Length: 372
Image (cartoon, rainbow, N blue to C red; front, side, top):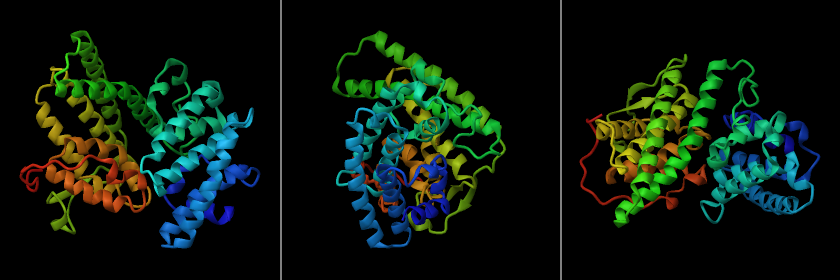
């Protein structure tokens, strides 16, 4: 079962997600075996419309989850590399397969962050443990990763722990740079949300706090702009405008076709990050020049990329961050279109379930078609 299920992951783009997985560790601990089997069997079952495999994956997931809880309470097993690996794999299972509660994976991801914090940065400095940390940076609470003690272990730095041996160094540096920016963005996002809610409720916020938040957003905006310059200098196929095959079910006459899904995911993440920063400065009362135009541009670029970057098994994982952010800036019509796409994506990626999104706005905004 272990061999057949892991063979499937090697044959799909899921292998990129699990490229750090040390297969030699399998067959030695029931916890780790159960975690990888549950995830791989779910993906295999979904890909082949095999309900029996999907059901079996859930049974194994339940058993592995119980074993994980026991390991975390053990005096030594809690800090074992295999325990961390199993925790990550079971979180991925929740992302793709879902549980009774759509956002269970969020609590699980927080638990992984807590486990890593307790193990300490030195435990993730090199080898398999370092690769595990690097592989799941995108789902972790970025706040602790932005602390000085952790910064030296949160980038690949050319070690190629999760990258192909022939991956160009500049590509690795840009990939690390985006995730480093994401860590810096997290406290800004939290602060902007609190300020927005206070502004809505008419609650007074001390000017010094607003100024501090505006400063952070301005600095990060400039940092991200520099990152984009580095990204844009890389050699990769640029997205191209293409006509739609099903224009009746789209908002635009043309969409963006991304030949590189990885580059497309980074671009969408960049546009979403810029949306957060532009809106933060608006909430702070210090909007950038032409911020409304910029915000609209980023919204449309993301929406026009959803169908291309969101393809295949890993597609919803690649676009999850950007589509959740852009939903907040979209018109009611666009939100309803996003909801229809979420229905499609959530069939294979439960974490993108529209139940975790607010209801679409009730507006009379004109269609975007022809405005792009």
